[in-house]
Image (cartoon, rainbow, N blue to C red; front, top):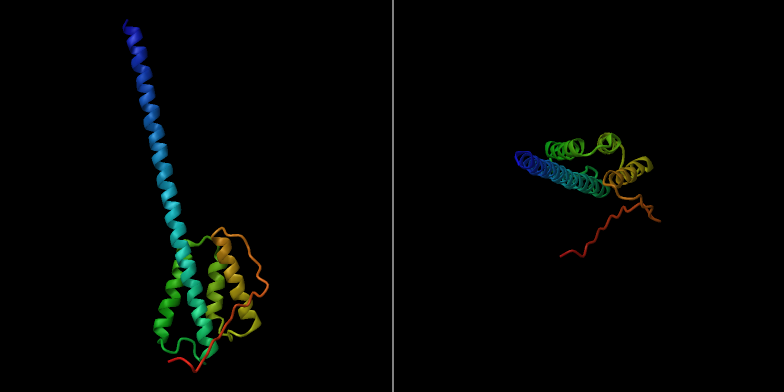
Length: 152
């Protein structure tokens, strides 16, 4: 009788142990998935912030001789570095970060063909970093400069 009870007790303990192990693995998987989702969210925010910064920089440069003339050099530097730091922390592709850096620091006119190509490449790298497929638009320039004297 004692042998039967010890066998049953052993089976029950094994089931409990397996259940605890499964729950631990499941919990670890949930934590890993939660972390991956959070990183992807922050990565997306960093990329969108960098694209918005570059778009504003380009638009400002097309209209004014000095980009962001309403901002001090210090403010502009802080904003650019903030974008860069977030890209460095959350993005895995070093080329994406280096391309952002070259767009800001190259010192050439935003209307140059090389500048526009680097920006287009940056957008492509951003899509790739986010796991999105590469999309080729017929007109891939997307550089609009709207000015009007009818604003009231």
